[in-house]
Length: 397
Image 1 (cartoon, rainbow, N blue to C red):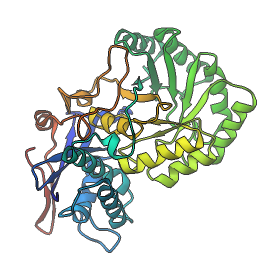
Image 2 (cartoon, rainbow, N blue to C red):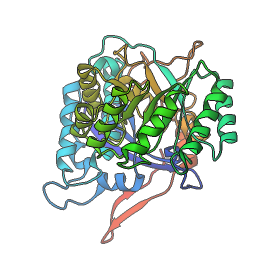
Image 3 (cartoon, rainbow, N blue to C red):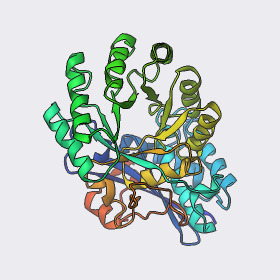
């Protein structure tokens, strides 16, 4: 089959706030083929910047848009998808956000290939089975301990068995302020649920600040401290990790969501002393590159965990990546209030079973379908012109 169309849909809530919440907007990518099939993908980045990567005029040989790289090309096998994803990356070699942008097309190509071959994506990328994963409700800290405690209680009421709290006021005040926030989360969750903390790189390269929190949070049963430092501070991460292990502090260090290409993720895994590597399929270039990281993590004995703060389309794509690795048993699961989280794929989605687990679908492709009515409801209408020539204009899905 051949790719006959690549369609882009910029969707967003009516009002975007400065809250660290990636579920407020998104760029959806649809790949249509000449046999009447379509696949969908989602990018994790500024939608307009990513859209430009699909339609921009050629600047020179290393700045050619994604559509030109893919339209008219044949997809009949996994090797075809990998070849085309790499071609799109090479065409946009000098485009800074190319891996974020091409992720949408990569995911969509895997989805449509699975539908064409009648196989789930996890099988196409080399897994033998799809194991259950424990989803952790991924939420933001409240503005204070009282609000945080209430959020945690609501998570338990929704029958989640694990939760991650992040951003908000964490790291903005004193050590005691941070302890009170995490203590409130623990109080609300109870003693049985897993608790993770996402610091959102708030301590930059300050190992001492991060270490103090790691020690304090370990006594509250925190599984990992996520992104305490900036992604590029690999040596500082190693110093922090070594110090935690040398002093037998029972908390893991997680990071890697900022990696937007394989080599960056590999550098973190090899040199930063991570216990958990978190990869965003919508940032690193799609399922193709995320699977490479998962394979490498297995070889290195590091636990792979998806980073996902978008819709159920991204959750589905993310879980397929490591479906066949039983030991990689945790998965991020956005649990906020944005209607885009589930609404974009409703009534399909990645739902928890009676025991609270999820797994990658056995259905062809990703196993979820996009809701066109939701796109119409939240679609932003865009027109991009250069010298009177229309490069892109939004269309009805």
